[in-house]
Length: 137
Image (cartoon, rainbow, N blue to C red):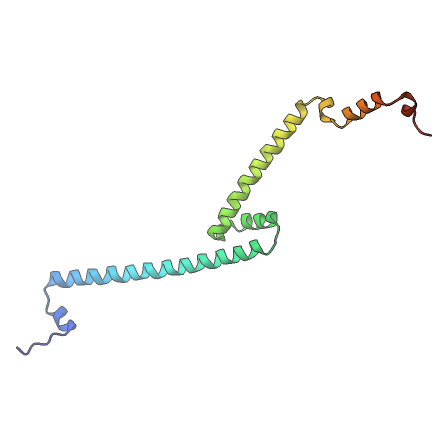
């Protein structure tokens, strides 16, 4: 009963199938840890990009300048910056549509309705006595 029970001895004296399974488990374990460390590095990089964008956002920089910067750096931007760029793009589309709609609506309104301040002036002139209507020299 004087047998050595070290891990190395157990692996070396195991059957071929057991050794193959253990090797496969070791490779899968190494691959899993590599993926975990890659993901941690990716999260750290994403957090740094988001922090940088948030610092720029709250610094008081113009939203148009931030949008131009986000569009220029689209491939290297963090998720927060891409979301901001997408939101600004949609905002600008809606704003352009609203302006175009207001222009169309304004073009359909008759001139008399566009100048409502003139109507009360005309009414006041009609009600004024004749001597008050004469222009002052």
